[in-house]
Length: 153
Image (cartoon, rainbow, N blue to C red; front, side, top):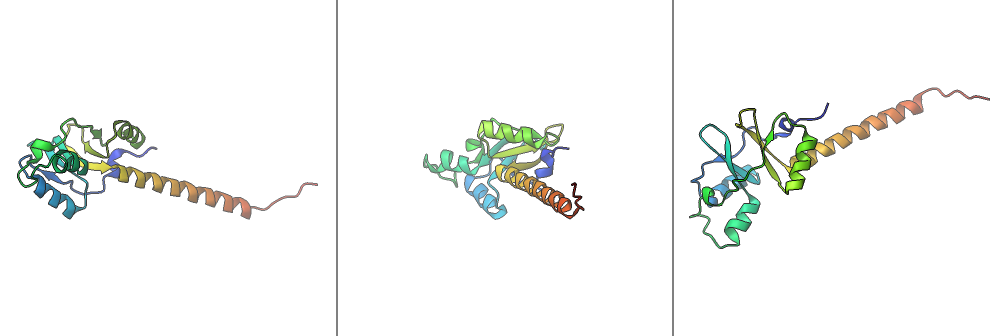
């Protein structure tokens, strides 16, 4: 059975801020939580935007905007790519790569935020899967080596 996207959510509660929050405060919160993105949600908990480290660089730092006076609503990404929690990881990983997205909001069946996954989460899951395969192969080979051998003459 293939893994579902909701299995990759590592943060028990995603970082969600109001669109009026300053970029400076968002950067502080992101640093404190050690995350690369903050999600902006409506009153029903549905994502309306995401603000990432890339947004900070391209929409605030490079244009010379004051992070203390710039709100998330002014610079957040509003064309969001979402994943449903029950989607297969392989499909979502392919779409993230195709769209060049590093952080992805994960929503439930009615569009409420469950969490955010990152490419790092996908790489970690892929590494764990490869390690499991390696151990299974190792055990298989070890069992074959321990099996009695018959000599046919």
